[in-house]
Amino acid sequence: MRYVKWAVWGTIALIIGLFLHYTLPQHDVVRVVGTYQERQDLTDWTRIFWSSPDDQSGTLANRDVQFIQTIRTNGRPMVYRNEDTGWSWPPYFKFDTASLQTEADDLRSTAEAPKWAVVTHYGWRNELISIFPNAVSIRPVEGPDVTIIPWFNIFFFAFLLFLVVLARQMWLQFRERMIDPALVDAGQAWDSVEARAHAARKGARGFFGRIQAWLNTWKAKK
Amino acid sequence: MIGFLRAIVIWAVAGAIAYFILRIYARSLRREALEKEWDADPKGDAAARDAFIEKGMTDYEGSLRNRLLLIIFVLPFIVIATLLYLVNYA
Image (cartoon, rainbow over all chains, first blue to last red; front, side):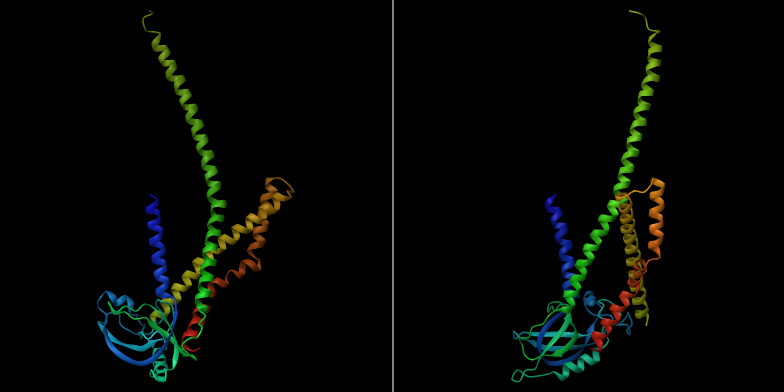
């Protein structure tokens, strides 16, 4: 039973962790090498990893998506998609896809004369199922070893902690003020029910006992 | 445009739920504080206690602290506006 409990909690923690890891912004230091636009199929299950912009029919089978090709500081390639999130999930409210593509083009550089930039993005890159993180913003930085402080995530987790503590306080208050008194009431009610049942049993014993006693009077005396 | 309206409605509903839950919680805290205040220094019988608490709660309903909770309704929209600005224009 203990293992089942841990498995359930572990699964819940894993799902929440994956969800946050996918949705929260992350920063990469990269060098932009190019941008391109490619028609993407939207009909299979990986549709959930493409965004659904507001100005697009929900029944589209495919559409053009913009991409930003980069090389990271460790020399590995990273390709971002560049899509509006619009008003839908995740709530980045990104509408400046075309501007971002322009900025990325402007930062294009070669390995010999690299221009480093920080790309803020969310999402995952997976070659196997062809999914790409969505670039949210890009800004040039001095060099490849800049320190990035993830302010948003700091505030977000502080707020999340605050919410968890608040929810716990609310639950404790609710239990103290509503459930515990109700249990006391129920306990008292149950006591009175038991008392009545007890009295009734006693009465019954008395009544049937008296009948029994009366019947017994008809028995032959031994 | 539909997406915009949907987002507004969803965040407004979330704000409303948060507001009502917090309102109940804050009132519960206030009532408990009033009870403790009376019990620390009782000035009468149970009826006087009830009257004291009810008066305290009526005063609380009109208080600034209670009205400040309404900020929760506005909060999602402040966050959205800030994000919109930071993501697209900063």
